[in-house]
Length: 191
Image (cartoon, rainbow, N blue to C red; front, side):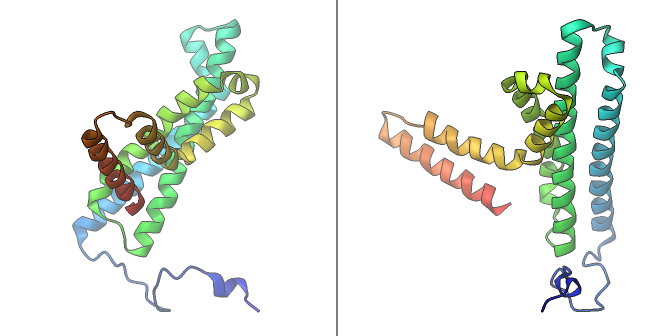
């Protein structure tokens, strides 16, 4: 019978192998830079959620009534989107570092991914404004889940866009567009 000790992740290493896979000092600095960036975003999102709880933004903007209520819930949704995107980015980051797959070429993904989560959370707040404005807890949940799964959502939206918008009467252009979509899809899967 398996016990929890046997299920610990070993990252493909032998027992007692403790040294970093990343011997290059410049590489170690870049990994620390990325860790600091995602940690700052995670902390920022939690601070913004707390400030929103205190009605900080409504007070600064002088909002009241219905506008204040809707604004408050949308800010919850958007800041929770940053929290979700940062949480996903952090999970992804520590896994690739531990497994030896971290590389400098994905720096822009690490930088922009949480901000894409924010953008999607804004759109989701607009789409689901009745749900978002009905409950702070629902606004936070919708924002967080949208942010956490934003990377997958963007990939699926691209697939849908290829199907919906790349149907062309010109079969030569359509074939080229389909090839571009397939290449893009393969690149997304390689992440």
